Length: 139
Image 1: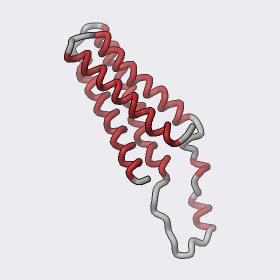
Image 2: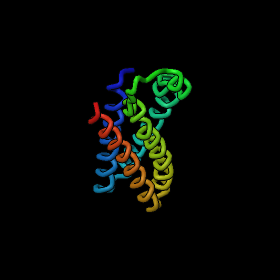
Image 3: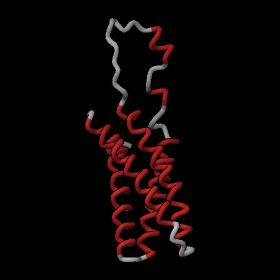
Image 4: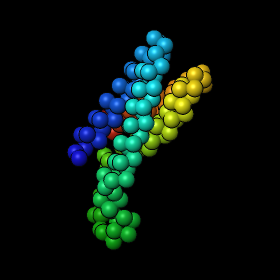
């Protein structure tokens, strides 16, 4: 999978989920609210697949022992690799999906408490979105 998909696909998930949940909330359509929350859950599943895959593998970066054994010639690179900058975003997507699960169950049971969980899920997902935007700006 290319690096481009690692930062574009989650953005589409986030915007689709936020728009669908907002529409369902404004028009009082439970089906759309649940579909939007399910998109947050799917984003979390996608994030777990990426996190458990080989995309953020530590073997791709130098270990402290390797750095200590190398001569740096006075040149120290302080820049974090692009994929490492995306890592917190993917963690936030997993948290967002965990927050969306109670929202789905509470909405199915017609409890108004689903609002808190869906708002938190959306905010956490938007945090991940802005982490991605910050990482892309450094490219």
